[in-house]
Length: 527
Image 1 (cartoon, rainbow, N blue to C red):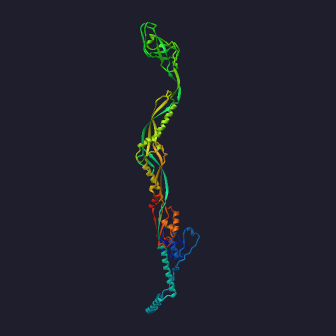
Image 2 (cartoon, one colour):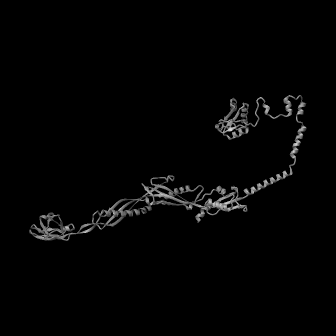
Image 3 (cartoon, one colour):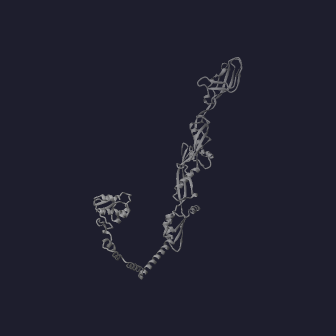
């Protein structure tokens, strides 16, 4: 009504009503005719601008031009093509059909009496005769050729229905397929942290268990150094002279030495007594305290007596001492210690992994690269440059490692493998294998390693897609199409009812599909 009033207030010859999107008040023929009559009454040409399909169809039925946008009406003129004749405001009844005669007489004021009106009305006889003629025309038999044609068309239609039913609805088929298996492999990186309390599978974090033990090893190696070393002590005889009037006792081991040059000490080998008076003498054998050729001294060079006897006796060697010798002997070098330490430590590293194995619990795995060794103590039985044919070492080593919960690692790897299986695929449990990469990374007791989960899954087959792929095919064509589209463990099996039909049904819903996933999982494992 608001639009009609707005149109009535406008003086333009052409009026375009722009309807906002989603405004569906004018999707009624009655409302559109109301606007159209208002435009006709105002001698205006009405048009609509809208994209609503219902309004567009209704406007086209009543003869109102419709445009899709305001730009489409710029610079254009339009005209309505109303289905009803235009309304003349001065003669509103001009477009109406002619009334019956009896109404014309009444309307024109010509009727003067009820008899005239009754004569103008159709009589009961004429009305009855009209109905009789209509009934006879209805009961009149059709021509023979028309009846035969009708029966023939009806028979053909029934035959077509029966043929369509037999071809499309009657056949039914059952297709049995055994899907094949496809290899699948996924690798994930896990981190075992002994400081972690609870696992975090999404982040690849597992708690580890810290282990340690001690091992002690010994080793021996030949010394490689050599140098001149004293081997024999020089020996000789000395003469003691009593300087008192009483007997003087010289005990064994009395030290006498040279008084010129480098002091060389000798010791007496036995005990002797020198009787008085002054000048009495006694001869005693002596031996150098230090081995080597420096103990070979000339005659009359041993003149000093050590201790309290120096005031009681004099000493001299009438002959030179002899027998002191030096030889080339093996000595310990630092290189010998380094080499022996390296050899023994290498053995300790080799035995470190075996030493930690008894500490493992059930379902735990110890990465060999995660084992660390530390030297706690080392003991050599000789010092550097000390004469020795062999050098011995006692080494104490601390062995540490991080044990990984193998069951938890497999569970995380299995979860990753299951996520990698395509939708509707089924993982074959007996085919699952886990491989742990021995090359691990250790950083401050945190072990990072890779786990590979490998297995087979049964190929997923969509029943609806399978039915659509073989509709209307022969058995050979359907078998070829299925084996090209999907990996099957064996050729598909077909059952058709009736079996004489020859092709699979044209309607997919008439094909029943049996996908034997369980047999598919057993088939390849049995092979």
